[in-house]
Length: 468
Image (cartoon, rainbow, N blue to C red; front, side, top):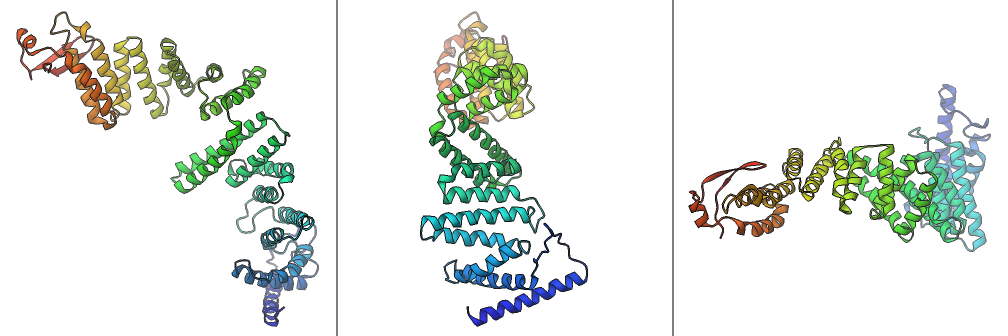
């Protein structure tokens, strides 16, 4: 040991000890001892000296980017503090973790490595015991510390994966939605390891995936609501990591088998039905009959515009238009304006499919009231006009004027929403050839460019145009 280093540490120790004595004399010592142990142990002088020694050596080691051989001088005084005055400072455990990690990574053999891993776990346990609350913030930290303990155990000894799983599980049970994303990743990795060792089945992996996804989705939503894009992206990355691990177990066939069996046993379990529909939706398994059956049952037990919307979409997928209509009507009452807008658009298309053109137009106009800059409802209205043009007249002029109104709506769709331009242009090319000819227009006493009012099942003012 360098004399200068020892002297510097000793001076710091004396200063610290003097501060302790002054604090005690003024009766302003706020620390509450645990296990009838004073904060600085039974030998406060040696405690303070060893803290100062190991901290001085630790400072040098950290300054060398943890490469200096001074690490050898840290162990003795640190161990003395750990064993004799565990309440002195939380830094004993923060530093202890880094010290043990270094020694594990540089262990000479498996036996030594195993003992050092056990010591690392003991450092975490003692921190939880003596510092259950963070020394600066005062907030409970048991869950967070257990999370780090579980991560380190899984990292340094993957054969102890079940032990790591139980530690990480306890961490998540404590912290719940506040669980760190890295803890969730290692928790899921431990479960995957258990599955590969035939300790758990696919259902267990699926349930765990569902559990961690809910926590991550909650944190993503919270970060977005707080305009914290950095953390939103962090949690998305955590989720992508877990998705990659889940992929081999995530086939729709497996999910349907697992949850199909569960629903047979508890067909009216609302929480289970929510879990099934949410997970199958996230994994792109909506085409399976189980998703529709679960959605319909959930809606019967706990009806909502949101579940009605999902069922309506599924009915449309199977071209069950008349069955879809009541669900989509209910979905339009959603408090979520974006969801209501989508429901009105789907409803407009559904009514068009069953040739109820007045109701289709009405639903499209309701969608436009919510979002006037969406061009799709104008496309739907234009289609309704074009499909009924021949029904709105009794001669070669009046049976073609509806195409003018249709083209007007397609042009309006392009104006408000450029993304609809390709669709609108194709419709315009298709239906503009059906305009009345110049001769027909003249024969009926009109001229191109004049205003004309169509009075059919709808009423629209348009401009007379001839076919080209």
